[in-house]
Length: 457
Image (cartoon, rainbow, N blue to C red; front, side, top):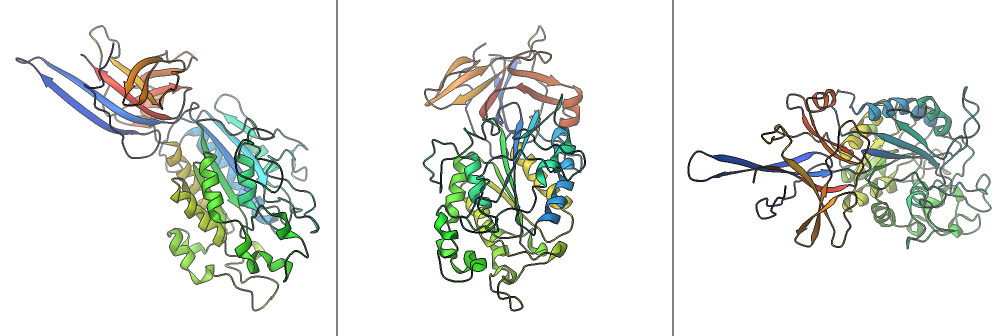
């Protein structure tokens, strides 16, 4: 069965990945009562069989003990919601067949500064917190959670409670960038190259939904020049260096551009913003007087805190908010929530909704699959690829302008081979799609633009 590009005009819907975005109905009548219906549904689907890679960037400086524990307490429900493909209010989202969770710290080292001699360098952490009952001393570089077999959510605190012996210069942006950047990138670091295809290999999967969550009670102090952190490198009080010499820090565009180049989908930040402003726009958050950085009148060696939850002072996280805005300007998705609370459940639920939105809703259709007289589904799924791309595990269907059109194989729902299959009135289709339980089932494949083309020609 072949479908002419001229008979099925292409269009791109606007909306979240993974959702059925638009529907085109074409009716043709010829010489009487005979009618044939042809329709095309244009889709943007996630690849890698609906996988999510979650990078936790956790401040391990000496006043973060309570905050780490509070985050660790909220993580199991986050992972359970992802595995169950359901938001806390019961709303379903796109299939999740696997979740990677990796942890890095904000410690990128600072020669000559106490506790800063050894850098974690953006490397995925393997050290387990043996002070927590049941935790092992060492873990894989990331935990993998799947529907069939997976790590135990009880292992999450073992890696997420990273301790408080890290450097007092917190570099969450530089650490995250180095963690997810390939060695071949043109991005320069203070030493070495990016780790995602080296020491962190296997964590960041092609086509997965990529998420980074940053937790810190200080603002970012990132630069790729290690001389900035030397005790005698710059004038002034070293504890105020990131404030007094902020103009020498790396521009936030380095991270907005770098995260986009590394295929990050969502940047989530839990840091120093006023709790009553966290739902506001980034510009409104930054304009709040409490976000102004100034030396504390009561303690001239510290900044005026934006809040004091859990017994610790929280600095205004201006650079982190500015980076969230810069990443959105590059087409990414960002969310900022306040660390000024003693429980992160609500903040993590908000982040979960953003993850689900980035990952996409269920691939539900607006009507049943049309059938041929013998009962076969009268549809094909095609994929649109850049010029010169091969059709992996698919048939070349033709060209659309300069794009290659590949026909994706239809496979059995009960098999394990990659491809697509029509799913009508199954338990999953009913749960995800409600009163119209018609969806595209898919195993394997890439992210990108697809079209489901149906009809008799």
